[in-house]
Structure formats: C-alpha cells, structure tokens
Image (cartoon, rainbow, N blue to C red; front, side, top):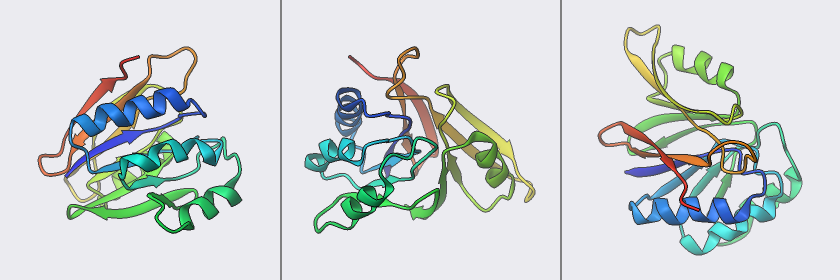
Length: 170
C-alpha cells in the first residue's frame, strides 16, 4: 500500500491540493495528515480524490467541532482522531501525532512499524532503535503551508517500508 504523509497545511489549499494530486499520480491509496490543518473546510478540497484521509489536529486546532462533524458526514473521506491516532494499514501498525518528541517516545516502545509527526516544518525520515531490539521508522514530512520552508510531503510504500521526501511542485 502506497501512502502520502503530510503535515502543517495551515489552510494552504493550493499546496495541499497539489501534494495530493502529485501523490495520487504515484498511486497512493491513503493520506496521513499529521496535524495543523486549521480550518476544517481546507480538507474539503481533497474529497474529489476519493482517498481516505487520516487526520489529527496538531497545535493549530482551528474548529474541532466542525472537523468532527465533517468526518462524520456521509460519504466523507476524512477520518478524524483528535490529538493522535493508532491505526492499522496493510498489516502495519501506525501512530500519528503532531509533536516529534511524542513521536520519538512512541517509536521507542516498539509497538509501531511507523510513527508519523509534524510541527517542526523540517522533513525527516529516521530509524529509531526501540526497546524490543528492532527499529521503528519515524517520518516528519515537513510542512505544506509554511511561508519560509520548501513545501514537502513523504511518499511511502508500506509493503517495502521505503519512504521518500518529495518537494511539492508549484
């Protein structure tokens, strides 16, 4: 299963849409959003792409009530979890949170194959040794909606557990 990991869209609808268009061209099946959507209506632009979007809120929470309502609307592709999410995709256990220090902590438990975070606006892919003697991959896709940083997302393949930082073509 191919996935798109993104974060910190901060209501930048054109770049959010462009990231998902690019990811869809790479045949992604799911989008993971690591927070800071801000306005829930921002996610509405992704509805036509028919990709499930797993999203948490981050520190720029916006209107959480409307985000919850939007996710419960019939036919919605949005799956909203609150502060963090623990999901299974392609037999891989994935944890999504906004803060990198929280992500590192969850990665060290060894309970997850992949931990995704955001917040810093700096894209990073790390392998962290966990207490079970294996490694957990931690991905921070950088930011979609930063005014000073290059907009990026992470393209990943859960079959091969290979991940790549992708700049968004503007």
